[in-house]
Amino acid sequence: MAPRGLSPNDPSSYSRPDQIILTNIFLALDANFERKIFSGNVDLSVKKINEDVKELILDSKDLNIDSIYEKETGRKLNFTISSPIEEFGSKVSVELPPDAPTEFVITIQYETSPNASGLQWLRPEQTAGKQHPYVFSQFQAIAARSFLPCQDTPFVKTKYQAVISVPDGLTAVMSAICDSSRSLGGRGNRKQLFHFVQDIPIPAYLIAIAIGALESRDIGPRSKVWSEKEVVDDAAYEFANTEHQLRIAEEICGPYVWGRYDLLVLPPSFPFGGMENPCLTFVTPTVLAGDRSLANVVAHEISHSWTGNLVTNANFEHFWLNEGFTMLIERKIIGRLENEHLQDFEAYDGLQELKDTIKRLGEDNPLTQLVVNLTATHPDDAFSIVPYEKGQLFLRYLERIVGGPEHFEPFLRKYFDTFKYKSITTDTFRNFYESNFAHIDAIKEIDWQTWLYSPGFPPEIPEFDMSYVKVCTDFSKRFIEWDGVSPIPFTDDDVKSLRTEQLIHLLQKIIAEEPQSIEKLRQFEDKFGLKSVKNAEIKYRWLRIGLQSHWEDKIGETLDWLVHVGRMKYARPLYRALYDWEVSRQRAIDSYTKNKDNMMHVLAYTLSKDLKLSE
Ligand SMILES: CC/C=C\C/C=C\C[C@@H](O)/C=C/C=C/C=C\[C@@H](O)CCCC(=O)O
Ligand SMILES: [Zn+2]
Image (cartoon, rainbow, N blue to C red):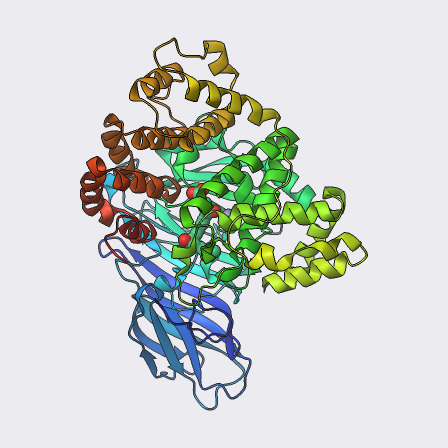
């Protein structure tokens, strides 16, 4: 448990941007794969808000800080580093010279730790090509402080530039524009330099880096896909609709300001489906289904170009502002890209997952509120789909109250335009909505208090178009009522008639049912071709169904899969299911213990709690 930080703006940060605020970050770092560290300098430009401020407080985690000095004069600055508070890291207090001007630059010489919570260093054998090492970052929510000393709060947004030196033969990419004219190594050089510029102010959690044997393919006028060469062509196929999605997003949200929209497909230990790093979305290889059926992850990350990256939650208590809006825009993109039935189908599917999550967490659990209190809670411990799905339901409700998309979408564009480059809280959004729709009487009936601050189910569930749901409900009923002795109640045509999304939904429905007999599951697996299924959303649900029905064959299959796949969305529920069954519990713990050093920190940390190995 961490006490609320000193910051009045953010319980997860030590920093005091109300006193003195970062205005620019310049990183000059060397990537050392032997030692698994970055080392070098960061120049932090700062601006006093209070002229009497005596110290600059920065967040850090496991950083080895060598020296801090004023850049212009070279004067050394005294600093102290507090003892760390668990996952929150240490407070770095830098003494400011009494005559420091209002704006100045400090240089910090430092190196990261091999255990940096925001970085994963992979040995060559852990990569697709097996020849070269790889490192990637995941800084949301508060792991940027393990890469650089900074004000690690989304309240603070800065531009950044970086010069990264990497071993010859490897390529560095960042959440910025690469200045390729300056990013040259030269034959025979041991190291090559990559230069990056991010000219739009972003919070520290959106700084991102990956270095590996990367190749790229153009997939549109402003997009490339990057990955190791073993997967780059599959990735280019899967994401071929990116430009189309970007154009639809611009119709809904306004101009795309980030210049490039590239994608990086990471190794399978990447812990999330996607991460909206500006200019370069990071994406898990588990979305490479081979049939573009999981491209909604890209619609989601594209949406973040406005929701989260332009208009940002001021701290992670207001995370729903990032994710609820993103889910809304994601589904609007799907609606226009495909059809409105699918938009509603996905929203309905999300509602089922929300119900399961609220049931699991408990209806009175404060973490099921839209706005949460993170005073004593680490953001990683608060993370769930609640801000995503409950947030999206709230926005759909707010949209309906004011007369539907025709009125709400122009409002959304105005909202993005008004608050672009800023970080805001829920109150700012509420005031903006209420003043924009002051002429609509119906808004008086909105129960903001319950929607925002009450735990449990949302006060109102919209009516969804059920065209795609009906067949899933019918299939699920047929399966559940089937005795397993008579012939399986599905024809080959039935199987072919289902869209991938419907099969996923059908499996989700079966998860919510009582355990099924293994004989039924075997026949279902054959009929629907689930044994060697490539689609990770299907595989994950099928493994869950197998485990909850105590099908022993599925224990080994699950553990084998999870040795490589670190996506939290799959790994956590599957590990929990293994833990819940006494037959698989010890095997799950043994497998976790053996593999945890190969997992990204956020997964190892949350799994240790799921497996009751830590508090
Ligand atoms: C109320 C919750 C408060 C704070 C949570 C914020 C961050 C938590 C941290 O664990 C990082 C989350 C990063 C998420 C990135 C991408 C997601 O959208 C992926 C969703 C799951 C998936 O598809 O794999
Ligand atoms: Zn998101």
